[in-house]
Length: 186
Image 1: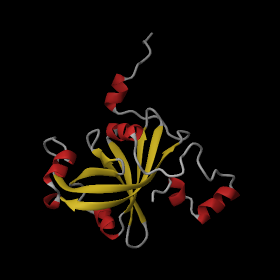
Image 2: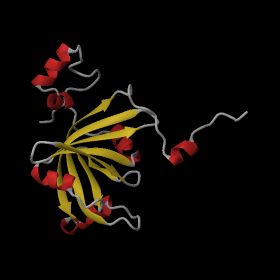
Image 3: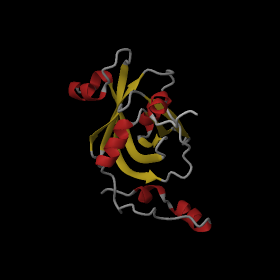
């Protein structure tokens, strides 16, 4: 059975903090059950060139890592399934190791210029490149030279939530900055 973001995130201790600090238990406008990504979410995800991935280590400590690639490198394979190609990085394998222990993840995707944020909770599993089905590898691995895929990460979406824009500072990539309208110089 699908859960809402609040079902997962709003534990008894969180609800107590919400009451104590006059928070809101149920964000406005969120359906009771929501784990299937729709067209709005798929379009948003396809436009991102980075996201933040949080995992949980064996000691219980959270670990957050920035993931980046060409726009659309995080793929919506199905309404409840995401995937991305994992490339060689700093060779520490903290996220990869954490996912072997506990597949629970949290992703935060941000559109800084538009001040929009999507939070996703899910369960991830790592598939080594050599064990990945050819059609999945072809669909998820980028066709860009120089990007060596080491493994794929598949995420089953448990719940998601759009977050408010209140504290998102607009930031722009170089191409976003160049493409935005600028006032005429006087």
